[in-house]
Length: 469
Image 1 (spheres, rainbow, N blue to C red):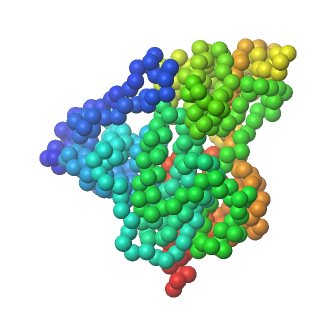
Image 2 (cartoon, helix red, strand yellow):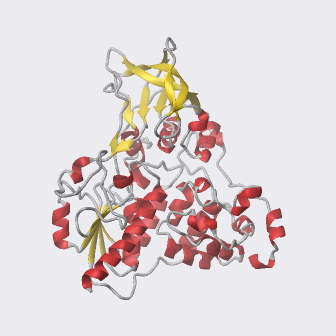
Image 3 (cartoon, helix red, strand yellow):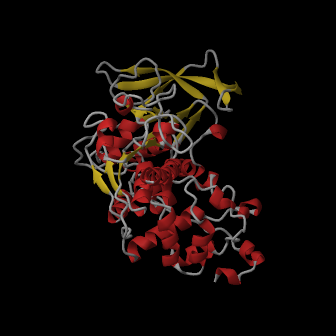
């Protein structure tokens, strides 16, 4: 039992390692890289938790998972008890256990991290969720229904979280998804080797077991409008993401073989372009160059490597110290033979006689004074231009709000970037219409979108109860 150990004994336990596919093998397949913790190893890791009274890890979690409680259950071997806690607190534990940046959230503030390595909270969350999938029945819907109907626009992490929370509260929830399958960015944006789509399917099925209904191929802003939705539903949560790609604005971006990361990853992840018999293939090249330094750039370059590029390059205009990607993803990329080219910026994309990419012209940079983000601004070095031969270029420098929904929603207030403005409760300028995730924040993480969904669900529930009173 965890409480039989003294603090000193817990401090003496070293953090465990996550079993992984060997780098050379995984660079050529789409199977999951991290293999998960065996039961005995998970229990050992859980015993490292000091069960702090002030619980800083909980405050560091955007969805406020009761971390010490579920970890204590794991330490005691009560995996079902741990799963029960997670099911209440987190609609997508198997997902967040794989893709959440715990190292800058719950694990960053873990007391164990002050003298050594923090407790592997994410790995334990994944372990519990995977164990529950094999050993427990899906969650059941609440016995009492509220009589209210709520619509959720988008089945990404924010929308799924809100839907699960609202269903547990007894509301009749319907999700409208624009694509032909569920999951949003979890399905089209994150590669199979990081988040197997069977995991997404399983978590969606858990929500359906709570009574959540999902209708795909419904493009809000085209198939129907928010105004039409509000004639049928008592409240609405908009979580359709910010999927409009941002490009480099350099000559040659219209050449064949140039992709936005959104299109490239969607073709591979959602449409199965990695399969030999894919009906929607993507261009391939011996050398691929990916512009950007975030998690999407890492997903893109590692995917290009697996799609056959013997040389896959990250071209980033700052230094390694400024890379915004997760440290684990950078480590995995390096192990898989990804080449990092720092302090370079594209000037022009060059094509051949048939309109295909043949090279990119780059310029070397140096870091100057900090910009608005607080990071040192890249400054061009005169006379440092050079050409890098490549057949595939992927732009992963961010996304912006797609105006399809917002342009058909009179009275909806937007900020200067086209993102939806909300009040402290997550409500938009339209009564009963709430919003969260990337459509509000701009590009963010899965867990932040989930946090928005959880907060919005609580606000919607309060709004509906006040409306009844």
